[in-house]
Image (cartoon, rainbow, N blue to C red):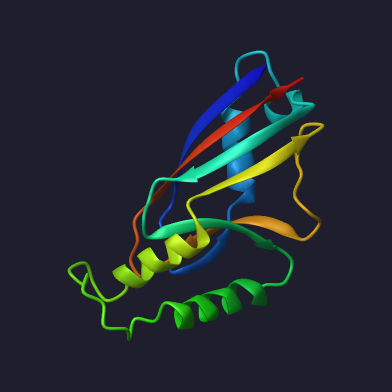
Length: 148
C-alpha cells in the first residue's frame, strides 16, 4: 500500500469557479515518496481532496465549455443571494452566502485512481469554488492511497 499526502496552498482567486485539476496533479507529483512515480505508481487507489475553509468549496464539473463556470456562479448567487436577511454579517455581505454555498457544494471529494490516472470523465475537471469577493489563499489537503 502506497500513501501520499500534500498540502496545497492555492493563490487567491476572484469569486467564481476555477479549474485546479492540474495544480492538484502537480502537487501530488511533488509529494510522491522518494523512489516512486507519484500517481503513476498506483494501479488502483483513491484520491481524497479536502479544503480547509468554510467560505469556499470544491467540486467536479464540466471542464470544456468556459460558459459553465460563469453559469454556475450565476446560479449559486441566486440560490444563496446576498439579499437575504442574514444574521451573521460581521465579515461582510458575501460571507454568509459563501457559507451556504460551501455547505451545498461541499468541502471534500474522493476520486478513483486507475492505472496511475484520476478516473475523471472526458469532460470533468476539479474546481475551486471561491465564494468570497476578496478571499485569501486557500489550502487543500490531498491524500492518495493505493496499490502499485
